[in-house]
Amino acid sequence: MDHSFDTVLVEYDDERGVGTITMNRPDALNALNGQLRDDIIAGLESLEERNEDADGVALRAVVLEGAGEKAFCAGADIGGFSDESAGGTSARSHYDVIRDFPTPVIAKIDGYCLGGGLETALACDFRLASEGSTFGFPEVNLGILPGAGGVQYVEKLAGPAVAKELAMTGKHISAERAGEEGIVTHVHAADEFDEAVDEFVTDLAGQAPLAIQGIKKSADMAVHSGLEEGLAYDSSLFQELLKTEDHAEGAAAFAEDRDPEFEGK
Image (cartoon, rainbow, N blue to C red; front, side, top):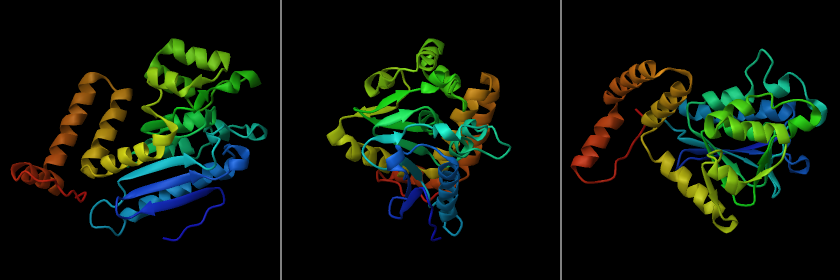
C-alpha cells in the first residue's frame, strides 16, 4: 500500500490505528486546487485500504492538517474558482468524502482557516485549533458566497446570525471566538497544541471502532432527520452493536475491572 501524492503527505501509525493527511502546499498557504482536492480523496482512500486485510478495524481515526507554520488551508486558489471549487461537479467532492468517511476525521488547525479551507474543516467530525488560528469566509469580497455549504454548516453550529456575519462581512474571527460559537471543538495554547491533539486522537482511536462509526452515523442522521426517524435509526444501530465481539469484550472488561481491548469486530 505504498502511495505517493503530489500535494499531500500520508502517514499511518500502525500502533494507534491513526492516519494523518497533510495538505502540502505551504508556499500557497495550502490553498485548494484541483490536484489537492483529488489527493485528499486519494489519501483517504489509501488509508481506508488498511482495513481490507485487517482482522477487524485497522484505521481508527484520521487527522487532517496543513504543512508549514502559517495555515491549515487559506481557501481555494482564486484563479481556480469553478463548479469544482464548490463541490458542484457530478463526481464526489473532497468535502463529501471527508463528511461520509466511516472513520472520524479530525481537523488539526494551526493558522489561517479560510473559505474552502474552513469548509474542509467543517466537513470533518472535530476541529481542534491552536489559539493563534483565524477563521473566516472571504468569498463575499469576490462577489460570491461560500459554495460548499459553509453558511449551512455554521448555521447548524452557531446559528444564523453568526453564519451571516462571517459570510456577509468577510472578516476573520479568532480561534477563541470560533470556540465560543461552537465552530471549533477545542482551542489550545500553541505550546500545548501538538500534545493535546495527540491525546485527543489517541483516546478516540482507543474506543470501540464499530461503536464510534455507529455514533458518527447517528449524529449525521440527526442533522437530516426528524426525531422519530433518528430514534428508530439509533435503535437499529444499537441492536447491531449488541451482536459484536467488541460489545462482549467491553462487557467482560467491565465485569473484570480491566481496560477493554477492542478490535473492531
